[in-house]
Amino acid sequence: MEKVDFLIIGAGIVGLASAYQILKKQKNVSLIILEKENEISQHQTGRNSGVIHSGLYYKPGSLKAKNCLAGRKELLDFCKEFGILTKKCGKVIVATEEKELKALYELEKKGKANKVEGLEIISKERLKEIEPNVRAIKALNVPSCAIGDFLKISNKLKEQIEKLGGQFFLNQKVKNIKKENGEFLVITQNRTFKTKKLINCAGLFSDRIAKMAMPNKKLPLKIIPFRGEYYDIVDEKKDLINALVYLVPDPKFPFLGVHLTRMINDTVHAGPNAVFAFAREGYTKTDVSMKDLVDSLLYKGFIKVGFKYWKMGLFEMYRSFSKRAFLKSMQKMLPQIGINDITPGKAGIRAQAIDRKGKLVDDFAIEKEENQIHVLNAPSPAATACLSIGKHIAKLAIEK
Image 1 (tube, one colour):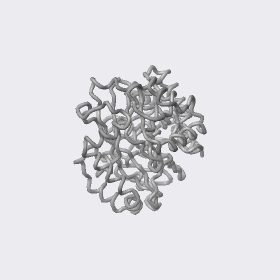
Image 2 (cartoon, helix red, strand yellow):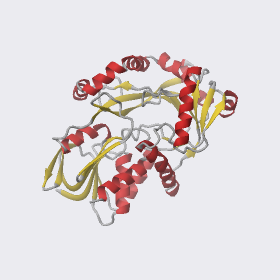
Image 3 (tube, rainbow, N blue to C red):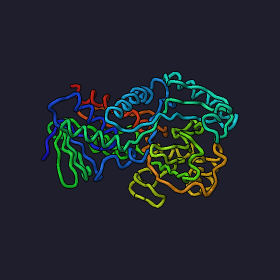
Image 4 (cartoon, one colour):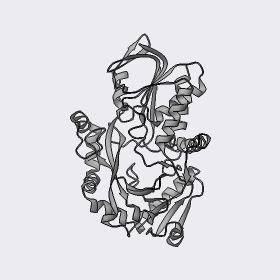
């Protein structure tokens, strides 16, 4: 049996950043990260768009807003220190219709409250200077946005964690957690680990891990998986955009909608949509887990969400199966793109937390109970904010 001071479940970027910050603060402690896959950061971290967010979208004063702004600077400094390529590319959020202008101005107001640098509402003529092929009546220019590679950042974090004395145990799926004399026994398919402090960064399975550790506690939320599907723009047409182009998002939803992203490797992706997934790791339309599906469908909070947003849900499902419908969303901002200019790309799964009242939980949710910490909700911009979130978790973990 391995005995350790700190044990972290989940080697996504939040778990890695938490381990890194703990080991930087605490010398001569033992720390283990358990990961059920044979490599780190294979799910939400390794499948995201690579955007290093500026802090624009988030409610002023929220955990997202605070951690995004602080974490963004720390992340860029980390990348600079360790020679990881990032690129300051900027972003434009475009209003293609008059009815979207109110939301655009609200975004500007929110961004300025969050102290996002250089925000500016620009005319369609000014937009043409930045993105000549994009159609809009007005846009919000966000020059501070950057792009990077979160898988490379994850691997560098792993390297630094190991240098600081942390250990990784891959292919270790947690099957059960028991409490014994104030400590935790974490049981995987073939090993048992004993820890003084437990930190749950299990992403898509964070609620289930929390339930293992706190079987008598009624959790305030449940993870419901939503698949985000992307299309790739063919090389011959990828120069239609220069950087990042987003439509004004619907303020009722935590999803940003279809957008165009020039990645750090110079490929261009369009997406994602947001369609209910039939498995927590359901990256294709045919991936089904009966356990995950039943778990979602019987949850009262999800039933309430379904009644409230069924029209939007049906539209997202339709757009998932119809390439032309997806294309139409793109053509609102990029009319030159055609049906043969996009090919199916990767997909990711968003771990969307929903509370029992049917509210889509938008902010980060981190709960501490005695010697255990559970990151129950860490959607975008968690990758951007990872080092700030990790610092917060380290403080919680270290304090008596």
